[in-house]
Length: 139
Image 1 (cartoon, rainbow, N blue to C red):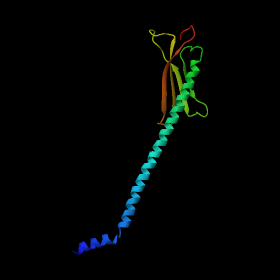
Image 2 (spheres, helix red, strand yellow; image 1 turned 30 degrees about the vertical axis):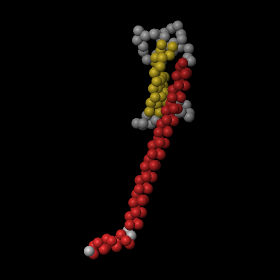
Image 3 (tube, helix red, strand yellow; image 1 turned 90 degrees about the horizontal axis):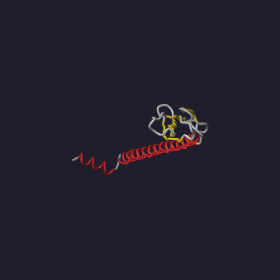
Image 4 (tube, rainbow, N blue to C red; image 1 turned 30 degrees about the horizontal axis):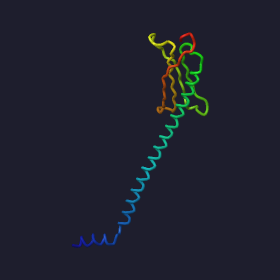
C-alpha cells in the first residue's frame, strides 16, 4: 500500500515530470530542425546542379553554333579546350566520327561534350548531331 501512495504522491506533486517534458520537447524540436536543415541543404544542391546544367547546355549550344556556321568541315575534327572566364570550370570536346559508305556523305556526324566538376564528381553533358557539309568535297 505504501508503494501506491508514493507513486501517487509523485504524480500529484509533479516533481520530475516538468524536467522530463522539457527534455522530450528539446529532443523533438532538435530532430525537426535537423530534418528541415537537411532538406534545405538538399534543395540548394539541387538548385546548383540545375544552374550548372543550364550553363552547360548554353555553352554546348554556342559551341555547336560555331561549327554550324563554318563553311565546311575538312577532314576529321578533334577539338578540346576550356571555356574562358567566367566559365573556366567547364571543359568541352568536339569531334567528328567516321560514317559508313552507305550513308549520305554530305552529312558529318558531330559529337560534342561539356564537362564540369572536380575529382570524382565530374558531370558531363553530351550531344550527337549531324551537320550538312556545304562544300562540294566530302570529308
